[in-house]
Image 1 (cartoon, one colour):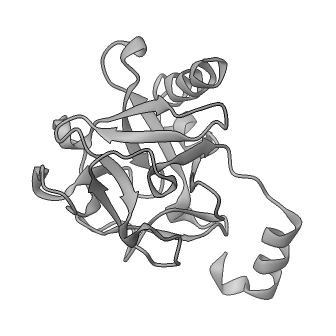
Image 2 (cartoon, helix red, strand yellow; image 1 turned 135 degrees about the horizontal axis):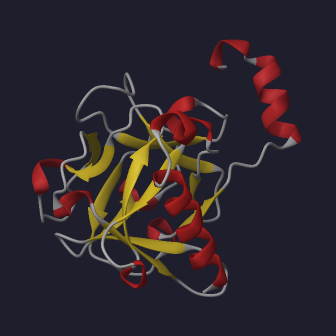
Length: 185
C-alpha cells in the first residue's frame, strides 16, 4: 500500500504542475517482471498508433512514462503517458478483443486509455488492467524478447502480465552500454 501511495504521489506531483515543471520530473520505467525489458514507444515515438514494445532499458526517451490519476485516487485508475510524445498508452481502436495491440494515441479521455494499477503480491509487481476491456497488458507470446509487442490478454496473473513501475535505475551496465553505443543517447 505504501508503494501505491508513493506512485500516486509521484503521479499527482507530475500532473499538478505546469508543462515546464512536468518536463523536469523524472520519468517512470515500466519493467516486465523478471526481465530487464521495459515498455518503449516504438517507431518514431511521436506518431499516433506507434506500437508499445519491450526493449532493454537504456535511458532512451521513449522509455519514460508518467501516470496521471483518473477519478478517485482509491480507484487506482491512471492514464499511462509517454514523456517523450505526451501521448497515452491505448488499446488500439478501443478493442475488447484478446490480442489487441497496445499503442500510443493522443490522450482523449477514452476508457481504452485508462488502466487499473493493482498490487500483485509482495514482490511489488503490478497488473495493468484496461478499464474498457477488463483485460491485462501482456508481453505478446509470453516472452521478454526485445521488440516484443504488448497486447491485451485475459488476466491470468502470469509473469508476462506483471510489471514494476519505478524510477529508472542507472546501473553500471546501463552506463557501460551507453558509452559503447553513444548513438543511443
